[in-house]
Amino acid sequence: ENLSYLKQLICTQDFDIVLNQGVASLVYRLFDADAKHKVINVLHADPAWLFQRRRQMDIPVAAWRPSQWKSLLRYLYIKLFPSLSDKKVCRMLRDEIQQSAAYVLLHDSYKTHVLNALENAFALSAGERQNLSDKMFAIPNPVTTSAVRTSAEKIILYTGRFSCKDKGLDILLRVWSKLALLLPDWHLHLRGD
Figure 1 (cartoon, rainbow, N blue to C red):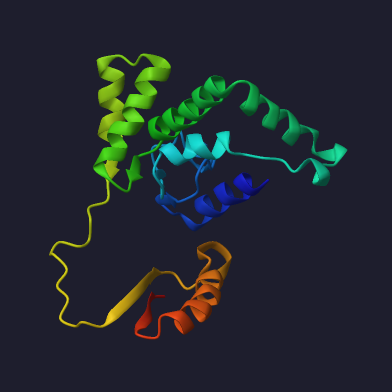
Figure 2: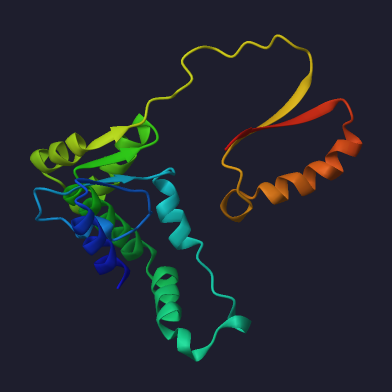
């Protein structure tokens, strides 16, 4: 339902490019045969995290309800057949990359990691590997000069979005309120939006 709403919105608003920042999102499937609309997928993590996240998935047995039987089956599948689960992650990655106009990663080494994982899972031909490689791009490091400290002040720096929900800034501030008493010569600086 969400995907059909999104597709309708994109088409009625006449957007040409969709920047998809969701991990394992199915947005890339919306326009796979559409030459007008381009989907650019962005993976905001080390690709190895996709594999680890599935392996570390846990279901608290006390909180499990019979209505969650699909989650229980998925959990058992991942725990009992980790190599099949890894292949499923590889299939998802391959499909996302193939059907995207571009696939953006955070570092050049991640591109190699993804290509090697796909090679191990599917025995890619040289042409398939090149096609996938041509669609992957790394975001260059925005810091182009070495950091120079001009002060002896002891600083802990947080950079990022000011969000408690997904960045855990509330946890940082709670911990800092206790650490500040133990480290009075240290200062916490927050930079972001």
